[in-house]
Image 1 (cartoon, rainbow, N blue to C red):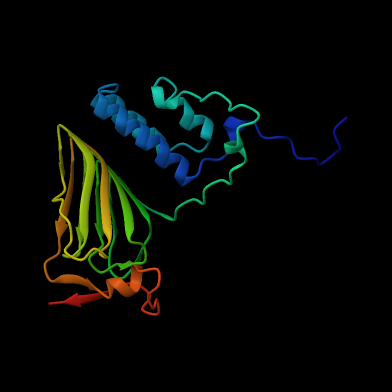
Image 2 (image 1 turned 135 degrees about the vertical axis):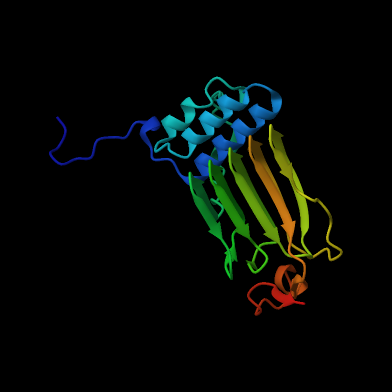
Length: 228
């Protein structure tokens, strides 16, 4: 007989979802759209549901009919991988606009991962004055009947892995001359909308070697910004 006041066990599907859980499901849906497994309308509906889901069970329902959403078989009992420590979640910035506007700009610390989601709205992510404390930054940009605009300094390396469906995914990729420059990967999807990256002329980062080199003096607290 259970003791009075004892907490009931929580079913696996009732566990509260984290930002990392939502990111994982959104990535699966983006790949499914690119592979033709989902059409634009299905993708739009499911991505909207991702950001309103509260539990991992609700998220799993959105990808259970996709190959990447199928549960993997349990590893053998002797598999040492099951004893490996769980990876530390990456710090994430969420900027969401639904029938409205949202932005992140000014002097702010740019985390390893930034999520921009626009549904019938607009998101602006301005990294041109941001403090880069990580050399590799991933921006997940999803625009559905809306737009995501991203601004970056002149001297960063830009890469992209996105898709436009009746919309545009415009990222002017290029390698920075300095190998110590931050690398910004923009990935995601634009469905009847647009994702655009612009370089802010006159904005350049300095002290890159001191910031990102593992043996350098790290007293600077991130690359300094030059203004021409």
